[in-house]
Image 1 (tube, rainbow, N blue to C red):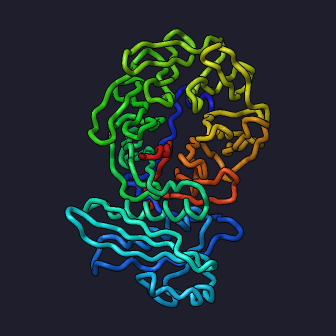
Image 2: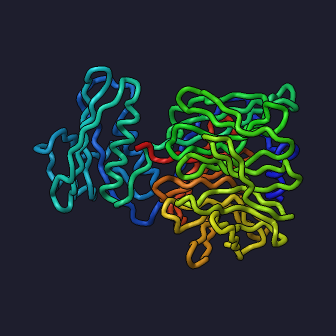
Image 3: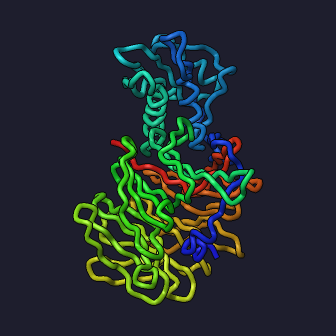
Length: 431
């Protein structure tokens, strides 16, 4: 059972079969029925750029499932300023919005100009500028996509966020050995960067609320131990190394505490640790298995997985009173839960007809919706805007990442070109 597999990580770890580094690509499998048509004109200003900014903007918008960018070969003209925009041409093409812009060199980097036009109402919606360093042109493109997405949908864009995930590479010459990499990348899988490489398992990476650190489980000390690591500097801190299980780290909303699972007292229980003082506090006390904690948005409660009722289900504890209530009742297995940023939706691994899917449950009503259709879906992580969630699954015998909207209307996959990946975590917003 997946629940107990996670508790016996060292014995039941799923390994992967390629020695090549993962490079994530995008495969959109489902979008909304009537996506917004938008024309993104190639940005002008510098003849040779290391990145095609307009293409990145179009790809971001398309990946959201909410937009259908006009193919570049179908563009009727290439306006570069407001005076060049003839709304009738774009109405004929069926475009509802038009994006134009330019990139100029400035000291130590680039300046981006992006303009959004409402074709149907024949007006400029906004004209904005942003600057970035010489090696950060993709960030300007993601910024432009974020601004466009928020203006049209009313939801903050998350294209400028990051993801982390684990890549596991089995040595084809010695199946008993594997290499584990903790990877940092843009939300679209680009600009991957290795944060850590080890010949021992790496599991359960989790972002700190400010996006500056990551917590994870490593077996480098010969048994499971929890570490934190600074994303920028690589500085690491070992938080736990008790005998038995040390797993499932989760940050408090203020970043001052970690919750995790320890079996140092003989049974898997949930503890918290004050990262400033090092003080531990045991949160649960039950003969059942308690694991996979996650804080509520206000930090006043913890949701967790427990088999105290006979089967793995999700429970919630009020940290002030110690009161515990069961949250899930549909299905004989629910685990690995976390809350959406607004606290209204809980996502989890849910077993249906013997198959593990990702599901979302309305916290107030208890209504549950199965979001995915693939097998062995696990490790759901919600985007900071609450619009999408990232999860790990299998395709053609390989571990891949995939994403789905919380209404299940939008889906895309991020398979690696040759490698296998798992354990994704979506970053918070960075400002």
